[in-house]
Length: 268
Image 1: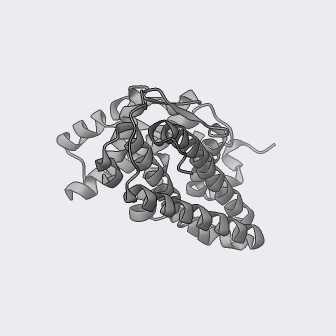
Image 2 (image 1 turned 90 degrees about the horizontal axis):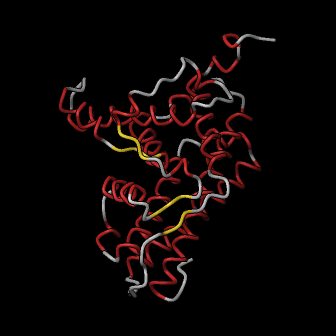
Image 3 (image 1 turned 135 degrees about the vertical axis):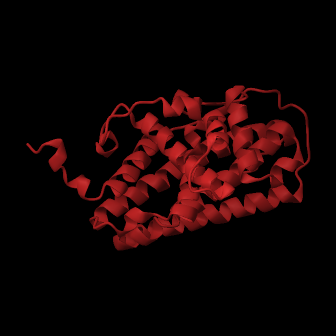
């Protein structure tokens, strides 16, 4: 039996880390659902902005499905496809979130709000239990200060199985948030003001889509240059695709339920 230090995945730790995180997210989102716990009886009409969002969502879903068929037919294509999967996945979830936030609030401003405002609103809906996931792990809201206190054993993120995966992912969000604050403020190192902001910031596990899109846009997927077997890239791609599909199905079910109350018809 090989020791932990001799495991081959240590040859490409960045890839293994993100592959493990994505596999975990896919697993805990299987059969995911979430419900709206507020009164949605007030009627409203559907503006053209909503119809445009729906068309964009359907186009994105078709594109992801087509790409999945490409990866199935040509496995080597997975290494290319995974480089833009986080962006496509994020915008799909982002537009679904805007629709849901609009249907719950009836405020059309949510249809054109910013990424960060939408993220803050979604966390607020979770915190108030206005929205509630079927898997409690996605209802948990953590502050940056709470996350910084989490203790994770060194290299535990490289293990296929660990009880600390949730904490590891939250800690990764904080790493990306620090990068975001440095870029935003144009500083090489965070000062007291930025650290105070970070510690007060809120994070939810569903932020995964947002932060991985940020990673692609600003940090690049550096692990794609690792000498990884093609089958590993296929597995990574499949997990990200299935994770996205799990959330998409949960969103569509909830959106349709709220839309039925608001408009007497489903949107999807």
